[in-house]
Length: 445
Image (tube, rainbow, N blue to C red; front, top):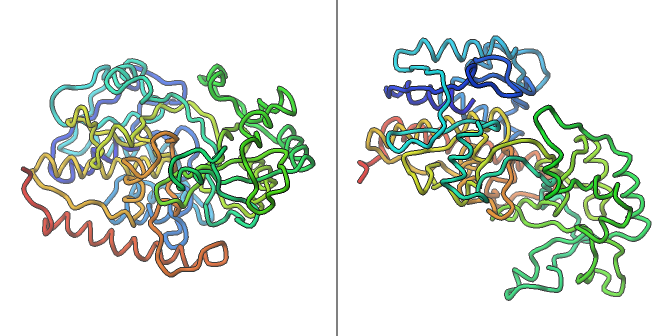
């Protein structure tokens, strides 16, 4: 998705492009064809509502930018209510045919196994980067900067947490500043609540590993249900241990267990549940996690999971234009940058293609407004996320700077989301116009 969109954006701007595609010469366990933009999981691009949904807004922004992926998806749309679902094989076949037919695009089959030293490159290898190229990336960036699995804990919108139950405190009040001493959000459990939670966790539906995935990964990051299976007290002595914490609402009551949440972005709008990576199915996760006191009405920016997925620690490795800091002739785009989903991946390809064109033609583009869906995503992966806890993320309104003066919580959500999307559409339209006219562009130094 990302590579196809990046190539299209560059070629449409008059830049010759070579696409290097290793399939079908080098296969993966998930792909069936050698087509570009093959959909290997769902056939859905999710919600197409551009007024109340962040991914729908991203659809709108990509259409406004002449995106190939969205144009082709619209032509192969299937009935799916408010979602955009596509007929996957004709979709990928048309993307492939369109790019191969473009006079400025060449498709070369074969694997790239080293990081190129010269030229302008975009690496958009998705979640299944080949072993040789992954090793080259790891050698360049460091072993700790390239992950091969998501180990995702659920992420909760901060304004959906009941702060009459939860409180802010780091274990043993650690930290030199008040901000550090209150870095964690704590949800207490009684013994009965903990036992009921464990029962629900053990009984919940779980997903199985796909071919090519491995449970060996769990040696370093066990799912909470696997920990619970090893003994009912395991979680209480692990991520849910209650020591070093005093309930600010009931200081005389000692919690039997405590679930901690940690801030997940600089805006403070998102919190992840610490140590709660899981293979529970999504519906089960929502039910089980809302048993946690303080999270009864929680809204989730994303649910947990463990999957095979090659991705960079982008906040530490990429600059604001998605270039590898140590090798600025190389940009990364798509799922390998730490975005999740077809649309998000294609969106980062669209942006990488446009940024590459600007650099090649000696122009400096204005920053993408962080208030747009595109800008919220690129800001998140290039510095807005906490590097220590960085995990792949779908676009969601928790990544957007808040609109001042609007009511928080679930009741004010409709007006708040409409304000987000109205603001984003205006700013994205202005940004596109400035990049086309060059009104805000200046020669590169």
